[in-house]
Image (cartoon, rainbow, N blue to C red; front, top):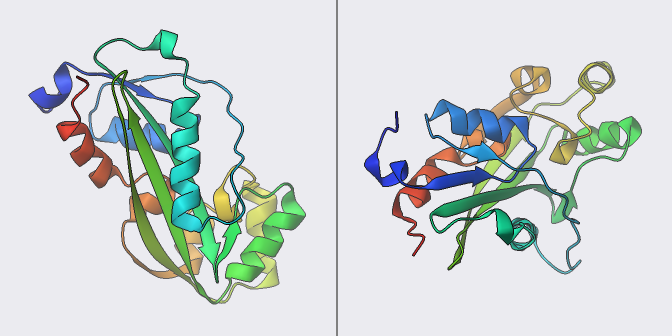
Length: 198
């Protein structure tokens, strides 16, 4: 049962393999289906964190196979970027790089930017949110424990705030917690309710 009639007639498609984004959508009782497809995450080097997140989210939307869309389809794509001192941190290529990223974030404030894009056959619209995350000083032992146990190679900035490292390491945040998980769900819900497919 849909919570609001504004969503009941829409064919929502989450174009993401992220289990966290899937979980967040499920938890607000939105009916959707998931479609997986490959897209290259390549972006111009001169973009800042917000521009990068929006560019990649829109790139994923534009790569979506239009043959799988109907008149009432809304495709949801998203991209999360972690940045500190104007340096962008993507997904680490191995555990050593993951540890290096966490050393960089340790004891400092960094920004998490998530952009999402809504795509219909007629139009495209993107929005984003930025959250400041403050880490305590992380010891070598804490970093090694987290990376070796959780292997956060699929996460921008090499951590998931909902995991062990977030519980023991994050002192405070300014902005949306769910944005740091990978989707500013409050903003997405608002946009979905007003996005017309015509």
